Length: 89
Image (cartoon, rainbow, N blue to C red):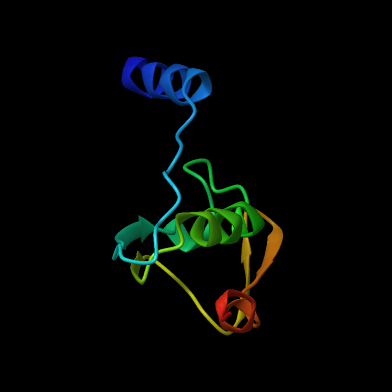
């Protein structure tokens, strides 16, 4: 429990910024989607989509991702049917 509390404290205090990617740069990123939830299994689909767009990677690798279906986590619906359309520029 102590590690979790330290982590929550750290992420609550820090802001993470990326420099704007210049046209000559190439950005590769990896992101653990955690089935579109946070560590407490709360739906974070919209936040994750915002993060992915902010990262603006040329190549992004997603782990623990579900596309194209609706499913229930902790009694709440997560709809991933249109994510690819939302992320495609």
